[in-house]
Image 1 (cartoon, rainbow, N blue to C red):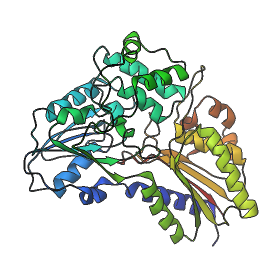
Image 2 (image 1 turned 180 degrees about the horizontal axis):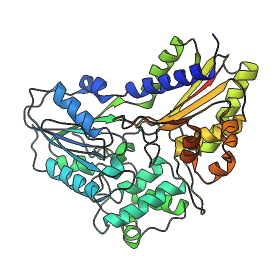
Image 3 (image 1 turned 60 degrees about the vertical axis):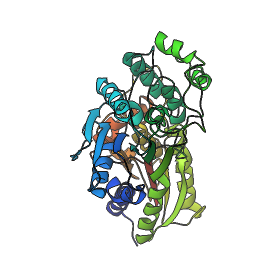
Image 4 (image 1 turned 90 degrees about the vertical axis):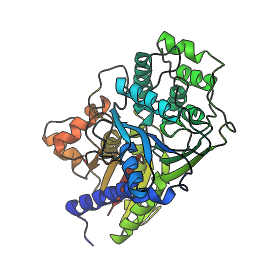
Length: 424
């Protein structure tokens, strides 16, 4: 089969769309529901998928009286019958994030043992539900969040700090719901699918401590607001620890590896051999791209570690460390793709895609981008300097100029980043 640019682009986009569809709550949620309760059923949720998960629950249980509140990102709300939907800001929380978090805590108070709380949790929940702990203000949390996002910390480190500045994260929502049973249905967007990291684990025990949070701040040389510094110096009012939430159950309904497996099936349908490099890759986006470019070249030149035509698939969440200089418009997926294009330097027969499955590569309405063998040539013909634009993290602008951005709009799910490198 002959691989040209049009076909390679079509296949890469099909693989991405297949991965996203595999994590659609409307398709997967119903199979994971617990037995219907004897008492009341209260629904609480946070994350970019929270509203569509709530709608899927209402569809699956039309005969169960449901009430509750979920908080999702602006533009990610969907119509629901009985469950309240609040939209808030991501990736930096706003006043609605605090309002939504307080509302969730109100919903779970005063319940009894026969009552059931269903918590719908997905990526983005940490920013979307922000109830500051005593002594911390919303402005404190906003400033700390911005610093954590820019310093290169990974999601586990970021959420370790977030949990210790919160009245709802790190198992505190489940503690507030006692003695009711709480069942969490989660879509994972974190490497390793750790329940304590997804949306900062509002319904599961937290193994991290104030000392761990202080260590993250020190490791990256951050200077948080005074209220945050004072809060993190505490050794009391810790988050609930393992073994302390006996009536809390966690069920993972969608995760990165599940979506990669669906992409593998689709790739085989196109006659491609597949190699899954992992579902939990972390590190600097541009360094990850350099390594993957080397593997792709080995496939192309030597047929190792897999013979072409083939596709290398991976998931996870790399980081982008912003330096002291001005930064342009970009995110970790477009940063990866531009670094990949530079590392491949126009190598024939290799195309690459990276996109966030939630449709949002950081702040802009961009999911990711595609690199082709002629990406750099087309860019230079337009007077662009690819290396300089990578240096100032202006990767959205770069791919916008060459016409290779991926825009999906809100996908209403989130299983982290999806990467595919096709070698003909």
